[in-house]
Amino acid sequence: MARHGEHAVVIAASIAGLCAARVLSDFYDRVTVYERDDLPQEAANRPAVPQGQHLHLLLARGAEELATLFPGLLEDMVAAGVPIVENRPDCIYFGAAGHLLGTAHYLRDEFTAYMPSRPHLEWQIRRRVEAIDNIDIVRQLVAEPRYDAGLQRVTGVLLESGNDASAVPAELVVDATGRGTRLPVWLEQWGFERPREDTVDVGITYATHHIRIPDGLLKEKLVVNGASHDEPLGLGMLCYEGGAWVLTTFGTGKAEPPQNFAQMCALADKILPERLAAAIRAGEPIGDIAFHKYPTSRWRRYDKLKNFPAGILPFGDAVVSYNPTFGQGMTMSMLQAGNLRRALEKSADPARDFNRATAKITYPVWMMDAIGDLTMHGAEGHTPWWYHRVSRLFDQFLEAAESEPVLAEWFLRRFSLLDSLWMIPSPKIIARTMRHNLRCWLAERRAARLGLPPPEPASLYAVTERSRSTSP
Image (cartoon, rainbow, N blue to C red; front, side, top):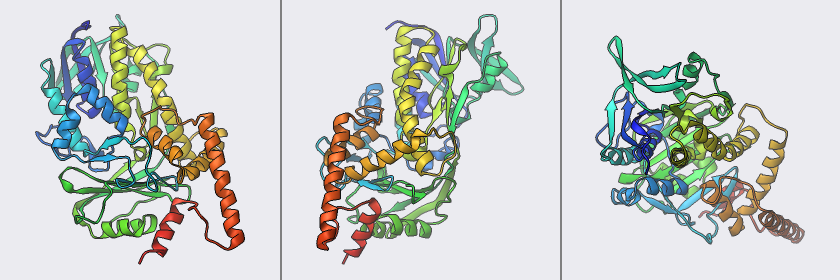
């Protein structure tokens, strides 16, 4: 593989930054990752990742991308006690937008997801990156990139060193500093335009408790009930390595989540079947409750800039940060790693190709998240007229998917970013949805005429209420 230069720098040893460093190691003689935070020698939360205590889900597509970047990683995680969950009804309880999917029937094409905690996943990746001969991870604060106005390119970084700044040359600098990136400010200082920012004010607040649930109470390893048009609060619960569960509740559209474990249990009583809520109540809280705010999803449109300096590119959340309740952020950063590799294979100055490729994979995921947030979750932002129409049509699709295995499979595989990033049904899928909904409507009319209960639940909340009414 062709080498592009002597040295590349990555700012921040985040999961995104570590994945970028892995790719760069194939193209540069040396790669240095600068991180301002102390890096633990074991799987542990760190101050620079306040969201690390909350629920994180490694989607099936993300696991595939990680296996390509780091062969053997998935097997080592399982050996370390990381649970795996197959997309089967005995493994998951999944509610989306007020509809229950994937738990009333077996799907035709099952797939596997891995459930490491965020600290464990970062540690597993970091120890592999540290083992690569030409990568160094250095605890050091980067003051700013070093820009040469005459060359119109970044030529390295300036490191904080007491009252002075020392220069480190590099042919490429990757900014993986996350949502707090200062690259737009630096661009302006260097005489370039700031990127346009597309935003959705989602107003999300997390509240998370780790709990231990007695053995035998839950057969599921993944329990999710997202927010909907009628319910701004949601809940997610995963079993992580070590046997502890992470219970994350959240409010959308600035709705406040539960403030203590008792209120979390009350929310579970409201939106989950009785047996799941009872298992949570039987759990023993570990430590204190943790809170985290995520006010705005943000996409910095570097792909729209006419001029962009050579020698630097943004990566991961520094480009786009998604609504975390959809669980897509880590997987999308791993897809960016693939974009970076392909851009480096084409050019020694990959920024333009990388920015365009990242915009291409971002758009379909960003659009569907925005439609859901703006039409159902009380978010604020630019809302094209057709968002509401798409939302209503998709609600009909999800209602059909509750009891139609092919539709449920289609949605869950797309939600996991496996088959395509586009959540657009084919004509065949649309026709199947219409036929199924028509059959259900006729069955309901027939049952009403005969004085019988409806044959299929109309929504997740109907399922929940029915499970309570029929419980012994």
